[in-house]
Length: 282
Image (cartoon, rainbow, N blue to C red; front, top):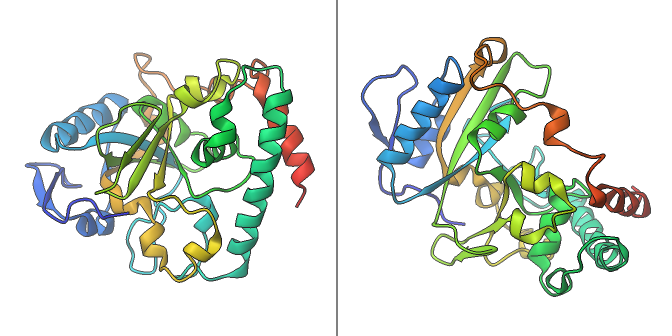
């Protein structure tokens, strides 16, 4: 995956004021821009998008701004998360083995489940990864993001921490189920085109997944790479911080509840996901 903004990007400084030119490294090392409420965040996002029209913005909400050993914002896929600067540890190899077993089970369960069949799941690995990732069946080389700013901010507010964080990532223009950009080394999966209507969660969350191109099928393909190269912080355009209690104090833009974000009772595929998790074991 290539780093966004080898040329300068326009960003809003944390203290406010006139937009400034920054590289991706500078944005990742900087402090998040504070926002007072949802409307304030939406206004700043609108400005970032307007200043950087060559990129499409997708969002990720978190309870913390995680950093790497260089004190830069780090947004890694779950399968590569850890404390090491290089992706060489045996637990990561084990995660890939688990992913392989999960793919096999998904194909079997998908065909047997009372949901719309889809031959694409059998044929395309990245679509299998997308479902395994979004339903938290196992870790994959993909990263969950959303096209909805309100969904991202709501996810950032689910935990008990006092602050929430929203990250705006820049991706190439999105078209179709899977958008592949060879120059950026990036794939973008639109979950609403992958999952049948019975799998309600991705449709409600307006979910997308980001992955490297070409995708990483086995651990051996990445074991000699530094974690820097599997970090979606390289696509970061802007990051924001807010105090949860004050952020949602206006009724105009209420927080989306956890129950609404995770409609498990009405989601037919959730039962299938549970079966796969049980059969995978530890």
